[in-house]
Length: 441
Image (cartoon, rainbow, N blue to C red; front, side, top):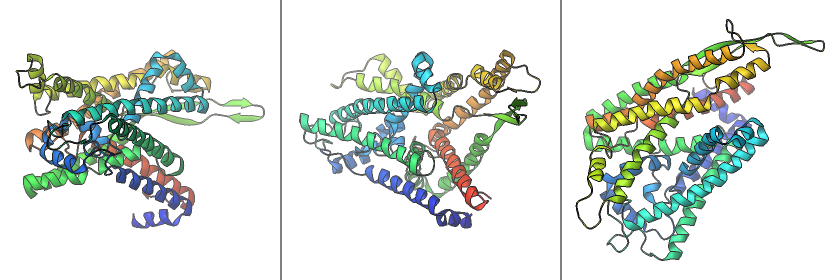
């Protein structure tokens, strides 16, 4: 393995790509600790140490920002606006025929969709930045700590110019992250956006493990590590699992040449939806908590009954009702996302166009029905798998009273494993092109 890494850095082209990628990652992590202009960094750290109990509401965004959200840094929004805009554009293909036509036009159409994604990212960045500044000024970001006019204000100068400067800085930081991700995709190794998400999540692992060691001791710490390694191995096994549907292409005469006659397969992964259903389910469960937080009276009076119910059952992940809703939402969004991203009729038409067929299945509608049958049977265990992995941090919250940033489970583990496997495969493929020996052989 060490010799393989040595070969990677001895190859000039691959070394340049690896160093460029590492440089972008270093800049990304540096920006997570540079405070936004107009923000009091000392007060932010003080509120962060005092009001840890409120982090769960913003856990998802804080996870994808590498902890920069609760630092109120220039990269506080992280990659989340781009992820949200990408998902929205992808979902709009189902309801807007023009977007579907652009998707089918090839590289030129994909370029237009990418441009729409960039515009939407900036718009969402402005919206998210405004929300973050509002939360920081009102003291709701850290459970009452840091409000304007208090002893530890996050934004001491509450003027309009300062507020606009912070909003513009946060939006520009989100745009810069998007640009850096595209640079890594173009000039580095792997998918840039995925690698930045991987970096943000991996950066939280030492902090989470250190907190468990500090509060629970070596026994629980070693147990968590052992369970984490087992879960990691199981996740890698499932993520690599796939159902291969054989496809045979008939021979065709084009001029004097014989084309086709080859055999291949359609890989149907057990987890075709990736981590998207977990993100959707987490976001849906965060909405009631946010609504309840903004609806809580500030004068000390008794909150409405529905606010009390949400605070009791849907705020923390240690309640059985929260876990059940979370699991069901993950299962639902898995089927939903697979249904809109994999079109059996489109795959069947493409196979028929190029003379391909599944042995024993007639071309056309029977092939589409067969593919739909296979997808529905594989998606069911895949959705249960996603739901169980997503529940690991919540179960840890009940068993060892760890916080909801438990590292080995949920969104973090799925992304780290998925991005890590894909990046290693790309490095392995480039090494095989030059040395006939890959990184994993």
